[in-house]
Each structure stands twice: as structure tokens, then as C-alpha cells.
Length: 65
Image (cartoon, rainbow, N blue to C red; front, top):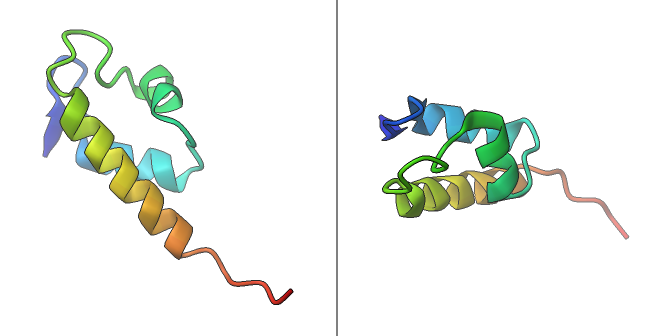
């Protein structure tokens, strides 16, 4: 699904960037252009990014201390 119509950024693009190590929404914007034009997609883009970041963090292996 397209999240940012202005820059043709999909939810898959956002998830891929999170999986590739993007740490902040500002970094996502710099890499994809998502939500840096009209801004209408900002809430959806942030929610998609945050959900993707949580999934990436949950997949990290646990390390015994």
C-alpha cells in the first residue's frame, strides 16, 4: 500500500528501511522522501515505521548476561 503518494513510498519500503537499520523517522525521510512534501502521510508513515522498528527489535537474539 502506498503510504506517501507524493514520493511513491509504500509500507513495504518503510518496513525494508527499518529492517536495514534505519533508526529514526528523520533518517527514514532522508532515505525515502516519505512525508517531506505535503506531510499528509506523516501519521501513517510514523505508525508504520514504529511498528516495523518494534518488529525488528523483537527479532534480535537474546544475549545471556
